[in-house]
Length: 412
Image (cartoon, rainbow, N blue to C red; front, top):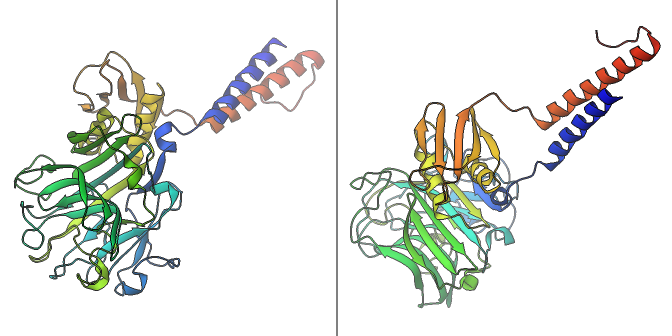
């Protein structure tokens, strides 16, 4: 009887473990995530996608939302059939959204995400994160005279009378987040001017041909809005009311929708990633996500560090479970490394250090963080449950044999 009780207790513990495996706060808050690793060119688009009828033949497709929330990005090119907005192997972590100028003042590559509550944060905590690369030095110039990124991501509508929503990118030498209201009253709510110097990209200030990491975070309770580049906070505003960010516009990657209708030509897709008026200057965007939680500064730095550590190169899909493991004082497995909560760590906040089979990252000032080590794989809860059932069967057989001395059909 004692053996049976032990086996049943083990079984119950395993079943509790299996039923209690839940997503962490950040994973649950991941509202939309596009890793651009595939481009579906066969599935028909639903109705209501802006510019669907104006996309050039052979350029359209769908980037899936890997969260499963259904916020697909419908991409195409309104300018040229020569430029499909997808590169399978040229992203930071695989595929990428791709934009290239066709020699006109406008670049027609755009990915559209239909409006939903998942991507309309209003006055709530949020984080927007992405990687972007362009090939040309971006000068401190005005529209039409210097090449620059334009809006990398936007939830923005430009009508004949109003500009509604927000856009994030580089405009006229200022890099940052812009909120728009009544037409002509756009407000740069958080920017920094890099004074004509190239924005740092993976450590090379003279060449813009490297992927850079860009993050916007907002803490609603503290009214604290921040912008990060390559893991470093570049600007902060602690007196922000983002209620005005709420917009019924669709989200776009690569270009603000409806920008300059009636003046900019084809379908109003203008001011995008690659150069405006000086030849064909391609640009790439990868690993875009919208999270309904606020990443800390150390978590932003860690996201960049995990993505640039040569031995790791973790995309956001791998980083989010790690950050959750730290928040929950738990552990998780990524590849062949088991990452576990640790205390007493030292080093720079968010910087991933180590090599080979041992890594660490400190995520709070008091020395908590994660240690990553190669270890034997942890069995899935379902596997453990089956093992416990096997032990239960052995226990029952053993008990029955002792009572009847019969030759039962039990394992030897």
